Amino acid sequence: MPSLGADMESATLTEWLVKPGDAVKRGGVVASVETAKGIIDIEIFDDGVIETLLVAPGTEVPVGTALARYRATGAGAAAEAKPAPAPPAATRPAPTSAAMPPAPAPPAPPAPPPRTTGSERQLASPAARRRATELGIDLATLGPRAGGAITLQDVEGAATARAAARPAAAPPTDMRGLIAQSMSRSKREIPHYYLANTIDMRKALGWIETRNAARPVTERLLSGVLIIKAVARALERFPELNGFWRNGRFEPAPAINVGTAIRLRQGGLVAPALLAANEHSLQDLMRAFQDVVQRARGGGLRSTELASATITVSSLGDGGVQTVFPIIHPPQVAIVGFGGIGVRPWCDAGGVVAAPVITATLSADHRVSDGYRGSAFLVAVGDWLQRPEAL
Amino acid sequence: MTETTRDTLRASVVEALLDVAPDVDAATLDPATPFRDQFDFDSMDQLNFVVGLHRRLGVDVPEADYPQLATLDGCVAYLRRALGTAGP
Figure 1: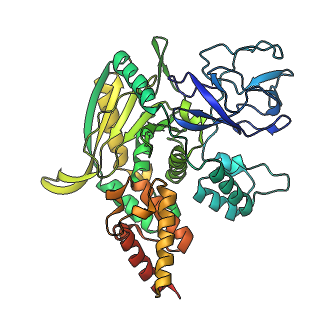
Figure 2: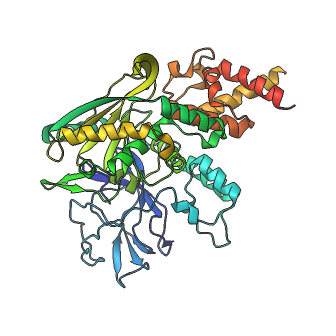
C-alpha cells in the first residue's frame, strides 16, 4: 500500500483490476483503494507479470503492506518476485508471511511518466483519441490491444464500465479529520510568511478570449490554466519554493509538479498534481487539468498524482473574494493563492482605468526562503501573465 | 418548433447538467434561477457543460454567449435559436 500523502496511515483495497498471470506495464493501474481522499487508482512502478494477490478487496491495511507479488520483466528486472506496488514512502514495515521472502527495501519510485504525452504513444484511431479526450479517459489505461489500434468502441466501453463501477467517489468519511490533521501540523511546525500582489489580467484575459473565439469548445482554455502555467514557469528560477521539508532539512524537487486544490462536491478538497506543469503546452495542461478535476470529483485519481505535488496552487475562482491566505500543505514549503478575478481601478499611463485584476498570494516556509525571494517570485508570476503568448 | 422538441431540448440540457453536477436534483431545479445560485457551478463546470451540449446537440456555443446559458430556460431558448438557424 503506497503512501498517498504524509498524513495517510492506512487504506482499504476496494478492487483488483488485474489477476495472477496478467502482464502489467509501468504506470498501469492495478488496483483501486479507498482513502479519506476518495477512491484512488494505484499504479505499478515497473513492467512485470502479476503472480499472487496478497490482499483481498474490502481489507484495510496499513501503508507499507505488500498488496501483491509480481515478476519484474522491465529493464534491470531481478529474477525473483517482488512485492508490488513499491511503497514510495513506507512508514511501517510490511508484514511478512510464510509464503513471502523478506521484503526488500522499497526502490525509490522512478520519475512519474509525463501525464499528457503518455497516451500519445498508444495506437488509437483519431475518433477514439478525440472521444477519449472528451471523456477524460487516458488511452494508456485501455491498451495495448492485441488486435491493433484502440477503436472508438473501446473508448465508449471503457467509459461505460467506469461509470458503472464508480458512480461517484465514495463520500470521504474522514475528509475533515484529514484536513484538520494536516493543517494543524502545518500551523504548528511551519513558520509561514505571507506576501500579496495584485496582477493586471487585461492581457491574459484578452489573449484567452481571442484564442478561444477561434477554436471549438473542446479546445478552449480557462484562465486557471494560465495561472498554473505562470506559477510553474516562474518557479524555474526559485527552486527554494519547490520541494519538501523532510528530516530537518529542505529537499529541492527535480520536477515542478503543481498540486491543484480542487473542491469536492461532497465537501472538502484534494490537491492532485499536474506533473511537470512548466513543460507542457497550455492546451496539454488544460486537458490534464480537466481530466484531473473530473476524476477528483468522480473518483479515479491515481496514486502518483496525490503523492507527487511539489507546491500547491489554491485558486478561489470567479465570484469569490479578492484574497486568500493559504496554509502550506506539509511537507511542501510553499503555496500560491489566487482570489477571484474582479474589475477594479488600475493606474495605467498616468490615468485610472477599470481593469480585471487578480490578487496573488504566497505563503512560504521561512526555514527555507525569505520574503525578499518570495517577493521576486510573485513579481515573476505577474510578469509571465503579461506575456500569455509565451506561456 | 413543437412542444416535443422543446421537451427534448430541455431533457438534453438537464442530462448535460447532471453529467457536470451529479448532485443536482432535476426535480427541484428552478428553470428561471441561474445555476450558480442553485448549486456549485464554477468555470470548469461551465466549460464541461458547454462541451456536453456540443456532444449531444452539435451546437458550439461561443464563449461570449455563456451568459445566455445561465438558467435552464435560458439554455432552451438559446438552443432553439441556435438549432433553428443552423438547420432543420
